[in-house]
Amino acid sequence: ENFVINHIKVDTMQRSSDGTVKNAVRLHDGLVVESVLIPTETRTTACVSSQVGCSLDCNFCATSRLKRMRNLEPGEIYDQIIAIDKESRLYHNHPLSNIVFMGMGEPLMNYNNVIKAIDMVTSPEGLGMSPKRIMVSTSGIPKMIKKMADDDVKFKLAVSLHSAIDDVRARIMPFSKNFPLKDLREALEYWYRKTKSKISYEYVVWKGINDDKASIDALVKFCKYVPCKFNLIEYNPIDDGEFQQASEESILAYIKALENIGVVVKVRRSRGKDIDAACGQLANKEG
Figure 1 (cartoon, rainbow, N blue to C red):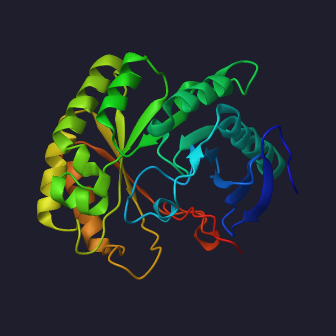
Figure 2: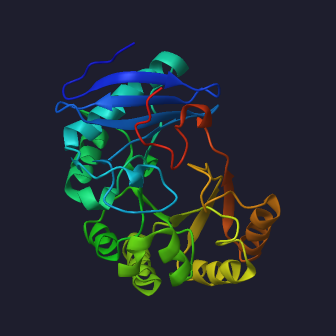
């Protein structure tokens, strides 16, 4: 079925064996972005895109291999969410319950439009959704994290961390050379002082990259600076290159070390892998 809304058209819709739905959304100028509906027994979450392609160059992510074509307009972001809300009602008999900005693009590089789209979603004329059910995930741009705190935003913040050692993080996310962890830490401390809202860290453990004791020790130290929760994400290889899922043993070592300092850890097993809808897989692949 095609849902046609103001600015966008759901061009193709794929349903995974686990109930995940991936939409390829065609924009008015013919460009395509992807968004995902992730169901659990108790809720449905929309994973939405903020850019066509991405401004950043994370080596492990399929989206970063696409050229950044442009920022999405507020209406294009909002319409992705409305399409997923319709699918949630159709397939799961209840409205959309959560939104994560973890699709294509770096939301803080399209800050004004993302904020406008969130305002539309939370307004009574939109979905009337509580901002506490919305999470914006960033790769960690200190200046913009401080700006969000100053703007007194009410949604939640997630940071794709992946390493608490500068050199290792730069290998994983080359752009992060411009944003040392010292600056990121300072911005997160500022965020927490102003908002009192816990940070969620997103973290993938890769074999031979960040699965050693030094990486775990550095992370434990970093997690003590600001109250946080922790999502360890199962990796979905995009090729046979250097980024491969670490052993279960390494992941358990991370969990144990974080739980020892009182950090709540969730291991996020990927959803929608069979339709390339899982974390890091959104790349407009046909078929």
